[in-house]
Length: 540
Image 1 (tube, helix red, strand yellow):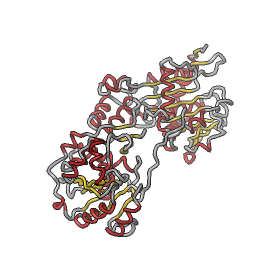
Image 2: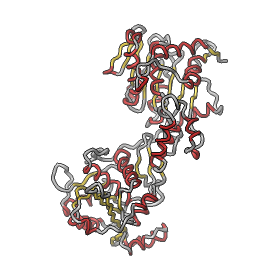
Image 3: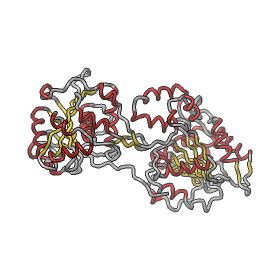
Image 4: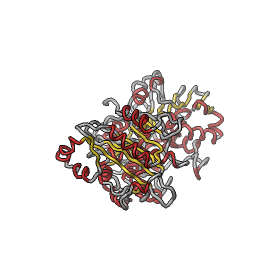
């Protein structure tokens, strides 16, 4: 039977509130004051609940709360207590995360706390170059870990701070640090601090969240696991302010309801941002898919039909999305505005093999035949797309417009790229003058900024697409995958129908924004290959 020691709990509280300090904003350098929920739900049970032998009962303290609830500074207090307040000689305290920068978010406040308080400053040595704090008196240290798991075997941690577990790409680091590492420690503590992430059944973050929820709900009995979870229970009622209040235990202390209201106003009409509000503000694990484009706003961007000849000589940027042999191939041109009163103008051309038009129309219930008659889709002879027709069209367009670049996905592209170089004068070497062909990755890093920009420009009525029905159909089909950091990319596998025209447009928009804005939020991805995707991990 567990026993409770108020003195053990009070010792941890006194250490934190006497020796630790706040490090940011208006509270900087002032003594750390634990909030009620931190005392009641975390510190008191974590340090005051003991086994019959007098050692701590809880090995894992799982703290899952929305952002801006003070997780990182609280974790820094844990780290310092584990280093020099826990009575552990030869203590080894580590902070770990998906990458070293994230893990350092716990270290930097801890280091500042040491510098701020004379007692800690006298006893502990801060080594910023190694992200390490040393207690020579007890031969103990606190160290930030990098993400390479192969270097972590053989550690003997007395305390582990695991930050933002939801962002772990695999389970390897978790396993290396937690499986069998408590053999030489009588009361090892693993402190997990995280916000909700993507509801991926294969990710370690979701698995541990589910386990914590089952322990909290009494479905699983585990007396070594302390689950502290603050989250909205009902995703359907996410716009209810009472739900916000219940999910944010630090509301009224670190931030107020106006911050949430402002964030809500920013995202309520932006499907690409709603999941971020759900995860970061309400601590709701989301599916990782964005299934709705703001179509009402898109329709409002139709304007009059676009007359190509009126754009003659205008600077523009292209995106080429090559399909398999019998699918849609799309080429998009994005014309940046020449002045603040103009909009981004979008022209898209699409191709399908002539022999598949009727079959695809019947099978997919999509009006391909009508679009061919209306010249929104061009056909090529036979049952496979003849790329020569596309090359000739791009050659014609390059004589009409000032095409600066064409972004392309390298998949299936070598032959057509060679033809564009040889017949149209494009260059693949960006150091050589002339219009360029830019290899463009299809992962989150490349696709997220322009995807979000397309949504933003649509909502702000800063684009003009002229009512192209094939492009509008593709926009209505699109589903975005979203990673734990809120990045987006078009997901062809999850989208209801073809999205090639809008993918081509996103690539073109990326290049237009990079080249035309000196203060662009986009990274210049010239020559950038396939992006590293967030991988799935082995079964738990």
